[in-house]
Amino acid sequence: MIRLRQWFERSVLGQQYFSRSRSDQRIIAIVSLLLAVSLLWFLLWKPVSDWHEDATTRMAQAQSTLDYVKSNEAAARKAGSGKSDDASLIPLVTRAANAQDVTIGRLQPESGGILSVVLEGQAFDKVYRWIAQLEQNNGVVARWVSIRGEERQGYVSAQVRFTAAGSP
Image 1 (cartoon, helix red, strand yellow):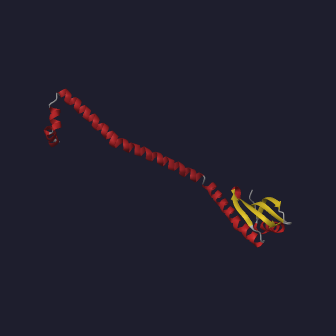
Image 2: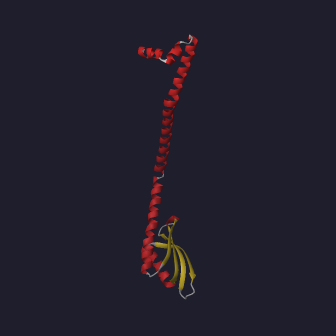
Image 3: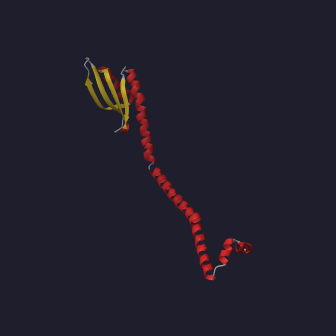
């Protein structure tokens, strides 16, 4: 501490300080102390304090998200399993269509476990056997059917919405 004081007294800044009156020295010391405290606050304490506050907020948000996920886990699993049921309708419907020689124009999974199928220019009796075979052998129910006759006798275009048996 003594060396520091001697070094300060020999420096240009120290010579300026000690050449001032006692009251000026007190003012300079108080202003220097305030400046040092301000620098300490803005360069060290405030960034650490802000970082801690941000980390606490992020932790609370993560905990809230975790609580939400835990409380909705069962519903998410149920919804996820329902989606796999929708996907399992597609191979059943396409295999049955191939077996009945029915050409599918478009397959479109919809919400609620529904699979929408569009057929164009198909023989009516094949479409009828295909729908009946799906219901009897595969547990796939035609919930809605729209059939429109074609110009050729016995041929139709259709839109059918299927669900798994037991679905609402």
